[in-house]
Length: 572
Image 1 (spheres, rainbow, N blue to C red):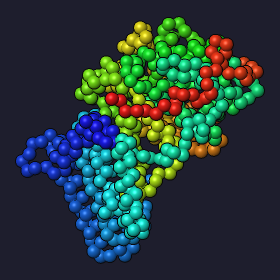
Image 2 (cartoon, rainbow, N blue to C red; image 1 turned 180 degrees about the vertical axis):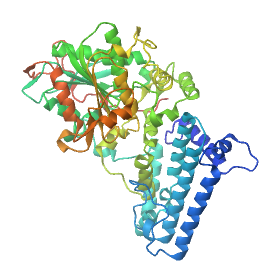
Image 3 (cartoon, rainbow, N blue to C red; image 1 turned 45 degrees about the vertical axis):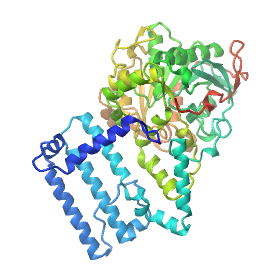
Image 4 (tube, rainbow, N blue to C red; image 1 turned 45 degrees about the horizontal axis):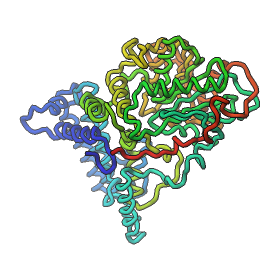
């Protein structure tokens, strides 16, 4: 049974299993031969006794400094760079809170050091490392009312009103079934997010196809089709005019089509991965070409949207269809050997359970998947909101990116279970002919058009080295670009703001790190580099057509359409 906050069973079970293993490792019982104790104490070069001795020495140093008074001495241990949990002055200036903070940091370091010292296989250590971090983050004294000076100060100054408001916020979130991370009332899709002018020109049970109005007098004769991930809403690509990737492409003379996936409900309980290809990406390509009258189009896929697009193109190429001129993949995995922290949730037992429960029909709730993504950045997305909303009784601020993040999307059970097994668990897509999709054996090497592969350096969902492996799988000439920042901020990096940087020009081979060593860093947004790569593939310049759609595919409704406005509901 899931918690009131929609924690997936895999997370809850994994948390407690890891906790038991770590407890055995940190507090071995005399004479015990438990595997966790044995693996840690026998680790070469870093035995448990050495870790314990170092820990006690630091604790003694901490208490000695506390007894002798502050005296301007440096702390025994300090938070890592970027850790904002202890920014309040009391954590530094008040001896009691300083002791509490430093004791917590020392304990945290001991836990993580024990994990690193354990003689375990890579997969087991990865899981233990992840759940240990979850436990350590959860136990921060900043997360508890009695040990957070800011919380106590707020309660005192408000005469208890902050406590009352926090409890009301907690009850509201329990009724909703999820943590509120932004002021959702501040935004409305189609009103102040997803506002680029356009229209829905096609729809089926899988998606609506949006066509956007041109922003230049002339456009490339070949249109641009964007396939976003089906696990989130498309408007991350069109949040506000100043950071809209859709608008940027239109301003560069592209005729932009975009897939807006349906938010699955009970009627979609039997939708498969093949449906996302045949009735999704492949159908969108067909319609966009029919409306534009072009010989070919250029396609962009992001995250799982990129996996769907790549799979569809492999099928199309095998069938002799050459209607796509180029492929751009944004933070996409085709080789799942190193899936990052998401891999801790994937094992045979968990996948078999999903196959038995929803694999033959059902819905995987988007709220559970959303929680999983939040755990990957718990100190950014979970605990600051717990402190702010529940302990301080404040209301979350309005932030368009977090509004999108909270707009959950369900997944059809058969599609989700198949995706987990064949991509994340068995990594079958990278093997030529291993998978059959739409009755066609799939070989990524058949994707012989030019490809632009973007990864981001701090991506916690698609590790950049995994994304790099795409260059070794697809046919045709590929260009790899590494952007600064993470999965979202690294992609949505508007050219007009000239922030961050990106790397290009490395020597492409089997070794991703060797590529980076030989690459060149350029300040600014990768968007400018991408549009220079794309433009020659767009065909000749033609007069922009102001009328959207066509006789066969007339306008159905204005953008952003109905599908994107459907909020995820809990399945029965």
